[in-house]
Image (tube, rainbow, N blue to C red; front, side):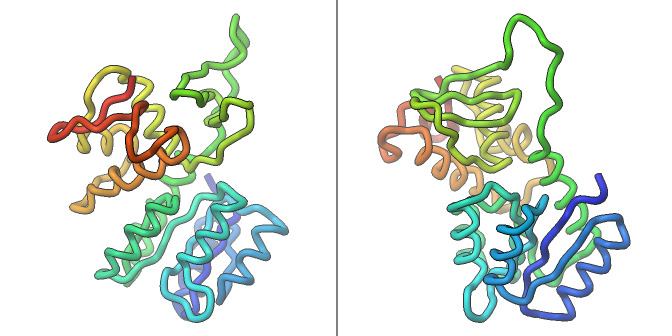
Length: 233
């Protein structure tokens, strides 16, 4: 899993260079940017495999950059946050960040997170041709193509989803009619050791509901079972 292009955006030159050099030594094609505007321009020119994005930057902050990215691209994003920046972490997850890591950055942990996100977002190899071209699962009026990890609306237009949102939908599809609690969802859809911030599942489901439910405030496709978890179907 080497050679992937990774963009590192942080206004701290020392951190940016340290992360870039570390990733380059491990075979990644790393490039650094000191502000969000330059990173957005780079994404338009050559779509990277992943972006590492600092939350607190002067000018256009990381949350604003993430909003711009998610409006156009499904590029995986790992956010860099301060240890106590829970609010920014929540906002980032609501907007579709794939993962987060707190500063000061542990480079080995960052590498592990990168590999996990890249593995989740990697295109699935085509299956041998059979009687069906792909396996599709209906989520209300929407259709999830599990072969291609793509979600479509009733008119056949693609709806952008993150790798984590796809993994959640895949977990629900495999457990239709069964109540799944947060621990089970974290285990099936988030393949790294979870931490006390397990409410991230609630935030991601909320974001997913806005894409597939007619009324996200009164969900009918992925329903909440109070005190137990969530159920699909």
